[in-house]
Amino acid sequence: MALAKLVDIRKKYTLEGLELEVLKGISLEIESGEFIAVTGPSGSGKTTLMNILGLLDSPTSGQYFLNGEDISGLSDDELSHIRNRTVGFVFQSFHLIPHANVLENVLLPAYYSGESMKIMEKRALELLDRIGLADKRKNRPNQLSGGQQQRVAIARALISNPQIILADEPTGQLDSETSASIMELITELNKGGKNIIVVTHDPITAAYARREIKVLDGMIG
Ligand code: ADP
Ligand code: MG
Image (tube, rainbow, N blue to C red; front, top):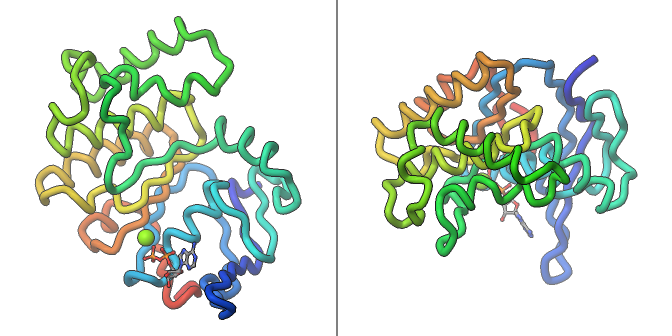
């Protein structure tokens, strides 16, 4: 069974009465254990596709099977329930909460997980140890470098032990050396069994993945 299967996924937006089709019939299968780069020029529909894969957004039409289940017709509540335990997100601009410390940021998704906070805190500290930032757990995000902030965001994405990590331009704000260290960390996660989908327009970042999916004008190229 495929991890994820998209069948003729379309996404339309209506802007000032004009209909814009952003995804124009995307079909693809993702197997368990994959490390995929979604590439393509700016505006081609990469983020829209990622948001649909990550259950942050729903397609206008088409079917999406996640772990064999057709999730196309599910309610927002049902989708967010599946999302919380299946997907971890990493963003270009880290999206850390500025007034919370590093440990609190990593723990954020745990508040929605229903797990005991004691267990989750132990797990957060293990993750911080793994990314080399245990000693920064009381620091605020603005006291960290960009690369350190992205590591914290990755730990936060991992806290609920999701099946899939979706990263949208995770190296977009980082210099090349820091980008390499972030992509090495992501590669390690994949070797440990995580499914990884990285959206990027940077060929060096894309080269870490084992498969490239090219999006061009809302279609797979
Ligand atoms: P990429 O991530 O490849 O740069 P996006 O998926 O962000 O591309 O956007 C694809 C197209 O969809 C762009 O033309 C963008 O302007 C449009 N778009 C994205 N989100 C919306 C939205 N919420 N409403 C209207 N148009 C949107
Ligand atoms: Mg984008």
